[in-house]
Image 1 (tube, chains in turn red, purple):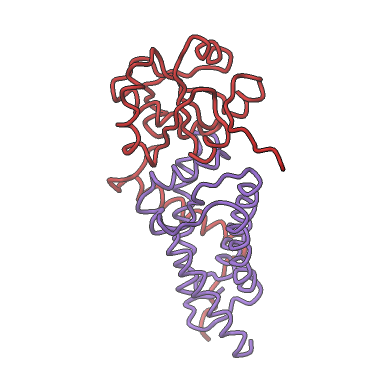
Image 2 (image 1 turned 180 degrees about the vertical axis):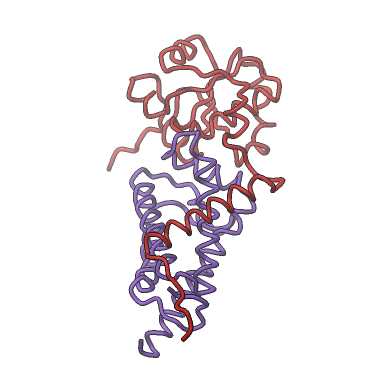
Length: 161
Length: 145
């Protein structure tokens, strides 16, 4: 009589699948040349400085140039007053157009999202890499800026006829 | 199981397995880009984005292989359904927040913006996974249980 093959229960099989995926992912990510570290370089080795909401508002009053690193559609909907849009996927295309404006700014504050600090930190790192002197990354997101009653620029809605 | 039921299970397996493999290959091969796509949602703290993106990409790859080969089908279907339920919720959330960016679900250029349309797509894709959870089938399966 052939020996019966033992089959793992559903929970055990699910756990084994997850463990296999984690092990494979860890091992391959380690050996792949394009593998990623635990943290991206703009987080683990930041060239920018973090800035809180209140100091950032003070910098805005002093004439700091704000860079909106969110999606262009979000930028169009509302942004920090006077902010420029610079988004990672369009960085190489747009940066040459904004290069001179950015170079003339006394300091630059980049903002994006809060938890993952994406993509503000990436843009901040890029700008520092391009030789800009003082680059800050806002620790809060645009929603917090807006909720604090700080200057916002949004297109006027057309009133209904 | 009846032949039509077996045939349906096989079709679900091949569809889902192919889908997961297609979705995973870019994420596995270009982990930095997938990590950036995950970071777009701003759901995870920054220290968790890279590990979670690698884990998710490889989980999708493993699920695709298991479904295509017919190994541990019920468990693979449970994972597939759970992930699709998670993605559906994420797309609904993205729809409410008006995210508008590419959902990052499929290889670049597939053009699937995060939002309600993608939520419906993910929900419909969950149906074959739920069928497999109920009726994994045995046709062309190496080790279904």
